[in-house]
Each structure stands twice: as structure tokens, then as C-alpha cells.
Length: 158
Ligand SMILES: CC(C)(COP(=O)(O)OP(=O)(O)OC[C@H]1O[C@@H](n2cnc3c(N)ncnc32)[C@H](O)[C@@H]1OP(=O)(O)O)[C@@H](O)C(=O)NCCC(=O)NCCS
Image 1: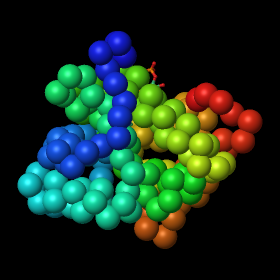
Image 2: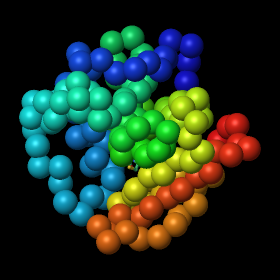
Image 3: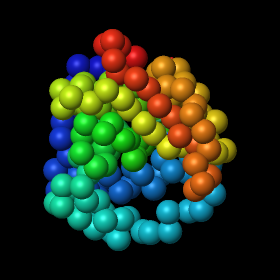
């Protein structure tokens, strides 16, 4: 990660790039079912999520390029990561870790004490990523997704 890379809140104008990054990155997620939307439709979904306030999204950018993003659904203090996607060409450069650390700071600032994430059962890279950041595998949910948990109490960095 270089000094030209910044984290900031997502804006309406980011939704096209958010949709593109998620669709490209999801190819590496070993999903059981494809997302099933094109970029334009998916950007509209993200625009609705941002404007309704149901999702709080932080993007990682270098200049005009969106390298990745993280989304917290529900209220921030719940610490529920409902999406974390890094563009394939930017993977393994610390973007994901930086986004999770930023989410942890936000959750703490809102009085939250945990982060939770749900990972596709075949997504071994994603599971390894979360485990390396101090998350624990909790259980498989009825949806088939694997629930990961990290306590933020007394922990200041992943
Ligand atoms: C999983 C994902 C978010 C990781 O983001 P990233 O920016 O590539 O990861 P980082 O560079 O911050 O990785 C930090 C550490 O996590 C671990 N890690 C990351 N990706 C990994 C992988 N595919 N396999 C094993 N370990 C991995 C490594 O320990 C890595 O440190 P290292 O590169 O020094 O060995 C990204 O690969 C991605 O978007 N994948 C597709 C979507 C997805 O799976 N999202 C998460 C589940 S919803």
C-alpha cells in the first residue's frame, strides 16, 4: 500500500465501480450461486443501499481507481461485514487488511465490540484471510455460509 492509496466513505458516484469490483472479485469467491446481475443493475442495487443508509461502505482508492471496498450492514456497532471485495489486480497487497482495520476502528468508535463476516463454504482464501486477521470460525449457518467472528475488546490492530 503506497501513500497515494486512500480510504474514504463511498459516494453515489462510486456505485458503478463498486459493482464492477464485486462482480470481478466474486469470481475468486467460489460462490455456489452467481450474483446474476450485470454491472448496471448491480450498481443500482448499491446506489439504493447507500442512499437508504442500510449499508455503510468504505472504499480504497488510488487516484480514480477503486481497488476494493468493505460494507457494514445494519448499524455500524453491529460489526456485520456483509461485503468485502478487492479488485483481482490489487489482491495480496494489503487492501483487504486495511479495509477490515478501518471497519474495526469504525465499529469501536460506535461502541461495538465485534466484527462478524459470512464466507462461502468453498472460499478457502477468504477463510484464511479472516483467520489471519484474528477471526474465529464459529459455525456453518443454515444458509450454508460459514460465520466468522472477531472480538474487538482489548484488540487494537489485526
Ligand atoms: C479475501 C480478500 C478480501 C483478501 O483481500 P486482499 O487485499 O487480497 O488481502 P490482503 O493483501 O490484505 O491479505 C492479508 C493477508 O491475508 C491472507 N490472505 C489473503 N488472501 C489470501 C488467500 N487467497 N489465501 C490465503 N491467505 C490469504 C494472507 O495472510 C495475507 O497476507 P500475505 O499476503 O502477506 O500472505 C480478497 O482476496 C477478495 O476480495 N477475494 C474475493 C472475495 C472474497 O473472498 N471476499 C471475502 C469473503 S466475503
